[in-house]
Amino acid sequence: MIGDAVSGPMRVGLAFPHAHVAGDVDRLRQLVTGIEELGLDHLNVFDHVLGADPADREPPLTGPYDQHDPFHEPLVLFGYLAAITTRLELATAVLVLPQRPVALVAKQAIEVDRLSGGRLRLGVGVGWNHVEYESLGATFRDRGDRLDDQLALLRRLWDEPLVTHRSPHHRVERAGLLPRPTGPLALWLGGYTAAARRRAVRWGDGFSFSDLAGAARDVPRLREELAAAGRDPAGFGFDVLVHHRGDDRRWREDVAACRRLGATHVTMAVHRLGDLGTDALLAVVERGAGEGRRST
Image: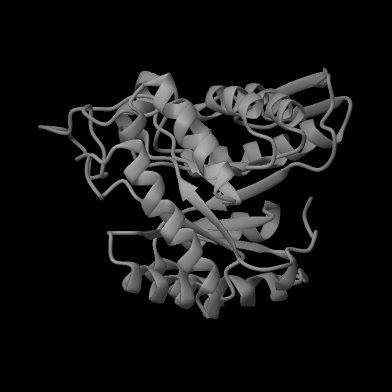
């Protein structure tokens, strides 16, 4: 899908509030069908398989989540969401690919693509939780090298009916996936480093930023790097996560800043608003989506 244009108005979506749902299927259905009815464009889902107690770890665990934070498994979740929605784009931002078997993820992505009618955006990155890696039988220290290899293999598994791939991390001998994708699958990257940008320029259709400050710093860099690689920056997507903290004016200003950066997508995060009921949460989302589309 590399090189396809990203056109039209900036798209407004929601970061899936895992803690709000917390395993409640009725609440999940109400929330997701509600945001589709409100006209939002996409749903971004974060990824963690395991939550770890950060106490007395070496090296330290410094990420924002621990064993008390619930997370739904994104690709299984998308299989369900494909059945109860009709137009909402289903995005991972990001799936921690190096702690997973890449051929399995390639297969799961095709399945979600088919079940949803082509609505998957697969965003991937390296992650930060070394306890999670070890628990899943993957090594943490070489995750960047493994992701580089996985991206090449992922593209081949999607594009070619029969693949032979030999590398230090993966070996595939004359094997392929059926059924095939219905069309090109969207592959995005996310992260904070020059290496993440490099991977996006080489393999990606877009980049997901976890905050506005990071986007302001790195969108110009990415545009320059895309142009230097012979790629048209106008055909590359930029999604920026912005927290809605109950202040509509601040949210509107942040979305306007995303628009000035040239973001193609803005994703509203509401998980810092506290334990709202679903109706109250949807009211905030509705207001935020309207303000986001009106911002200039």
